[in-house]
Length: 375
Ligand SMILES: NC(=O)c1ccc[n+]([C@@H]2O[C@H](COP(=O)([O-])OP(=O)(O)OC[C@H]3O[C@@H](n4cnc5c(N)ncnc54)[C@H](O)[C@@H]3O)[C@@H](O)[C@H]2O)c1
Ligand SMILES: [Zn+2]
Image (cartoon, rainbow, N blue to C red; front, side):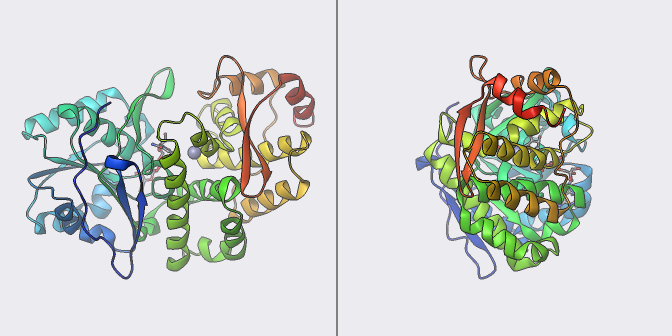
């Protein structure tokens, strides 16, 4: 989908905030990371050269926690602010709710230069970005990310969209935001299970691209679990830098971007086998990483130490690491249903060492022999 040229941002750095740039030519944008950044949203919108109406898409949970602060910050800078609230949860990520958002934009006479702001996690970010991509063929879109998953993953890279009854994220567009604001203070109110789910993605970045970041996580995990501000900021910043680098090289997932799916081939299968109720995403990804590395070890691609370090780190967070027992045919069937299957062949991201992975086609007979110990 064609995307309008992005408004240019001014300097967004303050002593307590850090900025990561996602370098995508004319579609480049900044991610501002730090405590209290939400309160400076008005200045940020101004520095992008935006004016007029701002629609804040959010849900009742986030409206209650952060709605008033955001409204104040935006209003103070002279914008007219409308809140568009949709129900909380993944089940809202549908075309029906996109249509509702568009109805609200029409009702409030939003124009080409009006702005949509997502206040929330990945669900709100994905649906709002998609609505912004299609309303008047694209209006500026800003994400205020409030979950760890959104701050380290979903707000970086421009994938927007909604689910279809027959599959997750089947409808969508690549549409880059004009800015992402990740206020690390908002993570304090996140339910613990959601927080840990994000940590699985954090660990993933160390394994796929950055050995020293993995070492940092091993050194500082107790401090991170204790939500020490400086460590949280380091974690979010480093993950954004890694994802930004990958996305800048492969915006539309034709090659390198696939490494971001480490832990997800088995993870998605476990989510599906659990009827999307047993595990939340990051829990399944954690088990997926442990078992994709076990598979890599079985294939003699990596040493046992690569498996042990990941399992130990994931265990320290409290995330599950054991794979539930399913027959091989159910397990393999679920793996084959993953979106990343090309022409019937299951591809999987497998580690060579901590910090280095490769994408490999899987031979079902080999996987069956390896899987026998778990079924
Ligand atoms: N676009 C991408 O590249 C990408 C990447 C990863 C995931 N995703 C998508 O992201 C979605 C998952 O996102 P998520 O994990 O952020 O979940 P989410 O958006 O559903 O948020 C989880 C829960 O936490 C609540 N919440 C959010 N922030 C809070 C806060 N600060 N305090 C208290 N409660 C808060 C929400 O209301 C919700 O109930 C999925 O739909 C997934 O497909 C997209
Ligand atoms: Zn994920």
